Length: 67
Image 1 (cartoon, rainbow, N blue to C red):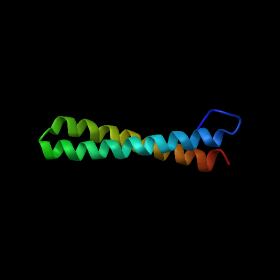
Image 2: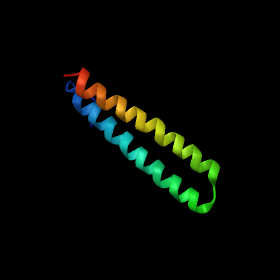
Image 3: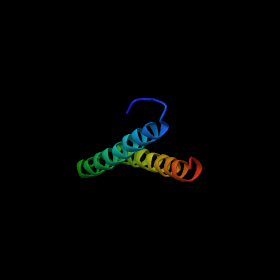
Image 4: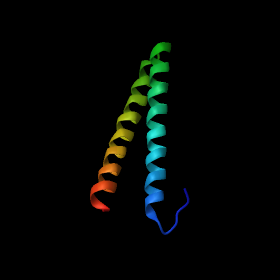
């Protein structure tokens, strides 16, 4: 999605990128827990929480503020 005059494409592209990153961090967290790497799993959990907060903030901003 390219930056253009229609900004909804930009928001949707960023949203899908963050959702993909969130699921990737969750997958890595589970794999690291199975391998016994608790510190790395906690870091990935923190990344997931931060990304989830950004997704929630962005979706609220997109649906309620930009209408």
